[in-house]
Amino acid sequence: MFWLGTLILSLFWGGSYLAIRIAIGEIPPFAGAGLRLVIAWGLAGILLLAGQRSAANRSWKLASIGVGVISFGVPWAILFWAERFVLPSLGALAACSVPIFTRLLSPWVNPADSHPSGEWIGIGIGFFGVILLVWPSWQSPDPMQILSGSILLVMSLGYAAGILGARKVSPHLTTAESIFYQVGGGILFLLPLTLLFDDWQAARWGWAGFASIGYLGVCSTFLAFLIFFNMVRRYGSVQASLVPYFPPVVSLALDRIFLKTLPEPLSIAGGLVILVGVYLTQQLSFSKRSA
Image (cartoon, rainbow, N blue to C red; front, side, top):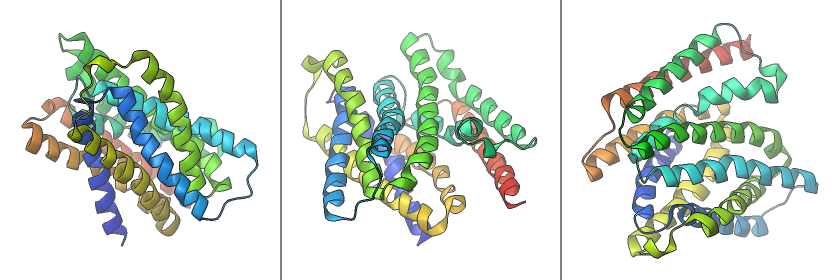
């Protein structure tokens, strides 16, 4: 069952990057990201009404909303905007760096998560991969590609900060509550961006855009996070940490099949180097915890 869940998540999350490209071809980027969250928020609300609630006080719910701003609102605003200028799979490759940023920031949230000396080797390799990943974008004559490639790293940093925040908040809430309040925080962040910056006159609102948003909201957000949270609960965080290795492969395959292109070879190599750094960092981190 673990590998079945990994396969489903890899397809859902790997396919989300191409779905975003299709969606923003018809729907303004911040509105598209917001609609994705609205769908997941509504489904989480139904699950919350039908299920058991925690005894958490209001402060934990407010904290969860704040985590949602960091983990959903900021990264998805960046990703939906940047995919207008870079290939979908570049976003997937950039997301490979999330575990590196997570480990780098972890001691600031939990001092017990100090870095063993050898772990810096994995973190260093990971950041070298980040430089390789974005280097072709930095060499582009198009300033929008330079900006898009750079801010995708801010997306990864937001994901990492959101993971650490969720680790603090989620134990006090049920899974449905965690999704509901975090997604709600993302909506609150994206709403003013949609009203202020989206170009509504250029929107086409076709069926392909709405189908992509539906896929993103139902499959890549609501169902994916339900599956992932249950995998963490059932198999532990060590095994669940294997999941992020596979979505970039799916995204690269979809770009090749549907868009007939791939990122620059140096960017792909950067993604592979990042994954090597992630693997080394995780192995050293797990060794420290088991020592």
